[in-house]
Image 1 (cartoon, rainbow over the protein chains, first blue to last red):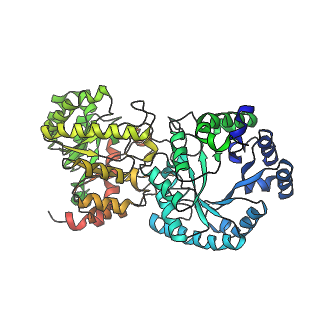
Image 2 (tube, rainbow over the protein chains, first blue to last red; image 1 turned 90 degrees about the vertical axis):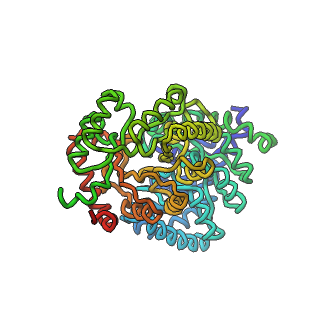
Image 3 (tube, each protein chain N blue to C red; image 1 turned 180 degrees about the horizontal axis):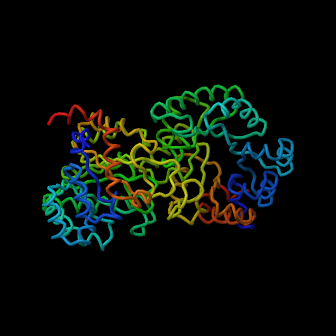
Length: 283
Length: 283
């Protein structure tokens, strides 16, 4: 694994990628064993092992937290404990906290425009809370096919508009799966970069055929997304953060988590290594 | 069915909705029996019964052709006979002919930008041919989830940009299934309307959950799309053409075609009747 050392420090694995067969401490140790420095985590996975165990695993491995999942969906059950989640994110030292709005159906709206206005108002309230706690919020536009039941923010341009309206304290995570098809992809990434709001870059791949709208994402290189090109757009837009692997896939969930991480790191080195080289080849 | 007579003359059924159990003559007679005046047809369905039989069925029923499917995907096998298809569309008196670009994978492209440029060049060539033959071309942006394997035009804004570049002779068909999620939906419909390029309005519904990316479209009213609101946008944009029902669905394909048409017409009357009333309540 020596040849991948230089890049692997700038790779983040999102726990969701292996969550079915690795609890949070197991996951963090798998990351640390591979030289990874940070990871993205889920609050419901902390609940499963208890916060003390989760914090100990972080301390033992030296892993720092990149993304913290998540606030939402925006229904009372989750919104009522948003302050608790934001404080937990701060305790775990997270770089940013994901908002998950839920979709049109989540609150029983029939009209997408008003569902969007309500979600935007909710985000404004959450931003005030996040500022008090001292954590950054992240919007991740999800694929338009998820606007019915998972999100009301389906494009980078909508996310940029929202951030323009809300001001500092909130930024954008670009997940290739959700945005690769957009003819405005490059201009909207540049727009986010100019505004200094690019918080993360998630990678995976779009499979042909895609068998399920939620759980059939591909490993980088197995699908049709031009990942290296989108990575270059991110770099040109000034993003110098890590590449984060987040794959929701029943196929990959069924495999050995150690093997999944090895393959993911290897693919990241193949695909993103070259464009990352200048930055990370020095110790 | 008397109460629906006033609207049903402005309803078009696309043959794809019942193609699995009704050949083209059967389909046209089902439409005529219900007082429908026009229908959208498929060239491969003409092939199945032969052009003479198809033309006779049109003449016998008095049905006129709205949309003609289709030119594409853009690979030599289909492009080489584009002139033949355009001439057939003219012979069948079609109002417009659909372009089906195919997706990123269709011609083995790895780069979406260049796949788009190549498709746009191809559309420009087809437009010259269509003008010679005297038929209008229609672009129908398809859902972003189909950009991998079915289209390179995944938004109304991209379709509008394309039409701006190409000039007269080509317009846009708005299918709710593909565009309902777009935060720019209303402004892009208005933009198309102002340019006088709205050629059609296709209806169906987005089901939750959606079980298949191609063949799980819903009957109007069974999903989450605010159909009446989008219809009002079309009317405000100056579109006064028919509502066209096009449903790709293994569930609906399995049902009796006559029943499918009755339900579709009834749903159209319920959902679009009110906003259509002023226009169609007079003989």
